[in-house]
Length: 382
Ligand SMILES: [Zn+2]
Ligand SMILES: [Zn+2]
Image 1 (cartoon, helix red, strand yellow):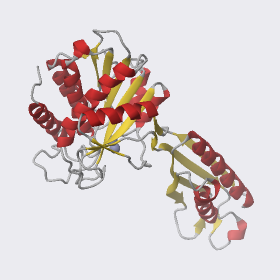
Image 2 (image 1 turned 90 degrees about the vertical axis):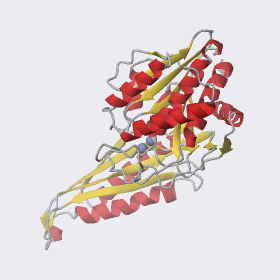
Image 3 (image 1 turned 45 degrees about the vertical axis):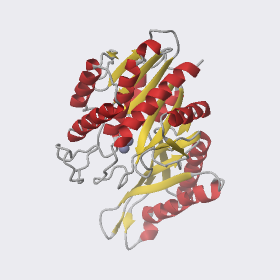
């Protein structure tokens, strides 16, 4: 297949995006999506690597001339959300929707693959395009890395649509962009008693309240005012009736940070507050601090190259606000230099919203941007 006119590429990508949008699949269930991606890539003679995962695809382009290996990444899964857009190509699967834009990510990288394929003989190295499953549950990137098929990649670039940015703009930031995501569970244990005779036992609900308030002092009192973090207690479970003090209480929540240092400080301070407050009330308090995805911290050289690629493909570069949302793309950066960008799509609503409608012209623009960026990376990576 040759793509002579950009219009026909844009139209084809939009058509394929609508096809994917109609048939969303949840994390690790992306079988139809995988089959479609494989057939589209194969039709364009893109080589597919033997990816030992049930879902997901790895396309390989280049290698005709010596040079580095670089990677482009898109996620492919949808969400358990009932679509309310009223679009003619709305989800045909009840209760499931591409509400995080992964359908646009897939078709953007598909477009980049097709454009790079046309220049395969000129490419100074190899581009691996990974269509990664299960981003929404934070599992897919680790599974892909465990296959070792990206071990030879020196750099990786990915994107997320950003409804708040206008179409034709791309948010490129050097340094921290998206938060590290942690999950905490706090268990309090003591002696239950009659609600009328609190002196004969422990009141874990009062202790819980003290802990919840104290946790809010970590960001305001233990971090620099110039540092950024969020601590949210999102669930509290204790007791089951009106006249009995429970012997167990459990709190749960999330911590979002942009550096490993802040992350460590919050974990340490949370442990101190919980054990000491519990100790002051003579009950037992234990924190289970579960580290999930690390923060996304963009490589400055890659950010500079991306700005050049954006200018070369007619995109306006903006400096995006970092977000406390996490992304499992962060796992790749432990192994290779990485860059994650926000693509403007002029959305009417936020990510994960049932009524999210975006400007599909962003797909062709992203495809050209990532094709240009991939070539630059091949030329500039030592
Ligand atoms: Zn999402
Ligand atoms: Zn997403």
